[in-house]
Structures are given as structure tokens and as C-alpha cells.
Length: 258
Length: 290
Image 1 (spheres, rainbow over the protein chains, first blue to last red):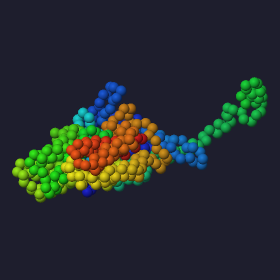
Image 2: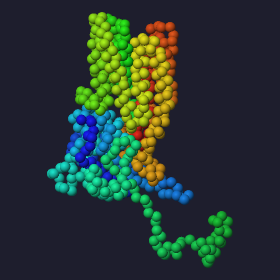
Image 3: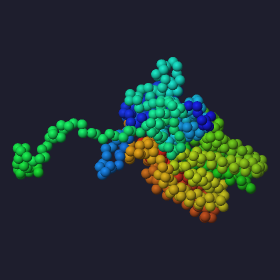
Image 4: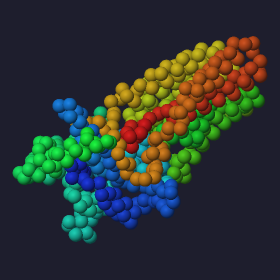
């Protein structure tokens, strides 16, 4: 059970575009909603209406400030990058092999990593083994919760065709999340990864994640777009005329600005 | 890592209990009758008490039996199997000594081997984790085994072995602390590799995903325990190794032995607290914390 499959027919996963994510947290909310109302134990909250609220989430959005180095002695503007993070459905998932009960498993047909909640003893070792913080022990249910890649949506024939994708992907208003088969080089997601230089998180951990992240595109250099702008300079620098005389006269007064 | 009392108690007392079982198992002239009963009672109190304590942190302890099934890949599962097998074998061996005055030596050797395997598998639960660079090192199993054997010898009254084992364990513990301090940096995992944004510049956590705390932060980011790390290290070394060694060097007396044992247990509890509190999980990087 907790042995990993040697290979999987498909590698279903997400491609997350750090260039277009606006950090609205809509994916967080839709994920919490779908996964509380459907498969498995609901995602509980603790002290939801107090100052010390906490709860179980399968998807969280971090925000990072990235400071580029100086360019030709000029300091560069920092970039703000929103960073959604959920289970990466790793090929070499360390969370699966450490499980003592066989509750954690990776499906050989599509590569999705799941938890059988009836077998989970809630020891938490899989969360220790995951470098990404993708697994959270639900305090109410006492079992490990993680992203299921909305396995109860993607194969669900009761849903209209366009809804058969993970709730986070379906809801993203800026198209920053894409779902597909990353084992198929012809799939939309694989092409996206190839063209945009998709990368792995913490490659040195050796987990071989299925999910890929697309880097933010380089910032444009702002062009001079208004030909009249130089003529509309609000401050006279040439030192001629009445304004220049007034400037000098006022400066000459006691306490005047030089 | 969060230093959960249940896990600290478990690793300390089951380590001592299985260590004592090891020495009882290989003893060529083991005690019999009531003396044997007392020794086995102490060993089982430690080993079984520790195992029971470890179930307190489970979300569903009633399903614990399922944890014996995945020995092929899981060190936790292997530990459970080794522990139960050892306890059953040593119960039989102990019964022979206590009730029949019979010394079934091969059974004792098998149990001793099982005790070592149990302590080793326990240590591998931690040493296998690539996500905690401080733990993923040969010193983790080496220390668990040395502490178990040294403490066990101390409980068994085996001064000839307790003395060198405790000295080696103390030296190795100091080395493990010293070497462990640099292992997170040496692991190569940084905020830049965690986010993949290192090619743009230096990464800083700007805003966390939520205003409060969460399971991950409670479990993996523990700062309080590290504040007094240096003082605790000195206390652990003095109580765990220096005091017991001095007591063993003095002429033997039951009071000396008692002081040595109590001091050693207090020292091991302190170093186990540090083992968890000082261990940093790479997931903290996503929160800009360690």
C-alpha cells in the first residue's frame, strides 16, 4: 500500500502561474468550500469567531517580496509575488512511504496522492515528511487532510463538462491555475511548462513534484509615451523671467529657502 | 519542531526500558526470583509506559493496530513490530527467570537483539526525515543506541559497561549538537529554492496566508525552546553524563546509584527536549521562519 507505484499511467497535476496570480485567495475559499461539503471529513475551524482563529486548509496563498540586486549601481524596485501552495502530488512522495498504516497512497492510474481516512491514525508523520506543508491534521476529525486534486469532481459525470476540474482551477479569476496531465507532452499544461520554463519547488529535496510553477515574466521598462511631457515641466530650471526673479527675491528674505 | 511531552517521555523511557532489557538478555548470570522480577518490572514500566505515552498524541489511537502493516516502507511500522516482538520474547525469558529459576540464554540473546532493533527503528523515524536536516545524520541513531545502552547498563547496575558508554554518549552528544547547528544551512534548502524565485533576487516573506496560526506553524515552528539552548545543553551534559559518571567512579553505594539514575534520566529528558525544540523543519521557510 505505502509502496510507491514504479510509474503512473497519467500524472494529473496543477500548473500555477506566478505571473498572473493576483493573490485574491478565491482558490483558498473554493477549496475549503468544496472539500468541507464533499469527500471525507469536513475541514474544521477552531475558535473561528475569536482573536485566535485557526483551521484546516488544503491550499494557502503566501505573498513574497523579491528584491532584485542593484543594476548598474541603481537600486531596483522590489516585486510582490503571490504564491498559492497545495499538495504537489510528488512522483517520489516521502509522505506516502512513512505512513505506518497504509492510509496514505499514490494512485497508479493518475498519480494522485490520497489519504484513506478510515485507516489514518493521525500520527502526523506524513506531515513531518512533507517539505511543502501540504498536509494538515484536522483538529476536530483527528485525521490527516490534504489536496485530493478534487478527485470527486474531475471524474464526476454528474457535473457539467466544464466543472470537471479542481475547484481552485475552476474558480481562479485570473487564469493563474491550470489542470491537466503532465505525463503527456502534448497536453496544454505540458506545453505551458515547456514554453514558460516551469520549475519545481525545492528540487534538492528529491521529491519530483508533479505540480509546476511558472516564473513571473520580467518587468517591462516603461517607455516615454507622452511627447508633450517635457514641455509641461512644472518647475522652471532655466532661471529666466518673472518667476526666476521672484524665486531669487523670496530666497533673499531672512529665512528664505535657497 | 514542537516538543510534544508524550514523544519526549516515550523516547526517553522506552529507550531506557529497552536498554535494560538488552543487558538482562545478554547477562550470562542473570538474577532469578524476586530480584529478576524487580528488574523486569522496571524495564517493562519504561518500555511499555513509553509506548503507551506515544499513543497519546495520535488522532485515532483506537486504530493503532493498523500501524503494524506497513513494515516494508515505514520505520514507524517497523518500530511497532520490533517493540511488540521484543516485549513478548523478553516476557517469556523473564518468566523463566522469575518463576522457574531457568535461564533460557538463546531466548535472551534474541530479545536483546530485538531491544537494539527497537531503539534503532525508533531513531530512524527521525533520522529518515530529509525535511529536518538536524536529524538526518548518522549521529541520530548512534546517540539513541548509545543512550539506551548506557542508561540500560546504569539501571542494570553494570558499572563496567555503563561508565565507558556514558562517556562516549556524552562526547557524541556534544559533537552532534556542534555539527547539527550547521546542517540546515548545509542542506541547501533556502527560501529561494522553496519559492523558486531566487533567480530574481532575495526573497522575503511579505504576508502570511492567514492572520492567525495553523497546524503547520504549531507543529514545525517552535522558537521558545531554542531561547535557552546553551544553558539547557550544559544542564543536559552535567545531569545526563557528568554526575552519573562521577557517582559510578565513587565507591559503590545504593544511594550513589540512585542519584546517578535520577540525574541521568533528568539529563536525557533535557536533551530530548532540545532534540525536538532545536530541530528546524524546512516548511518554516515558506513562513520566513525557522
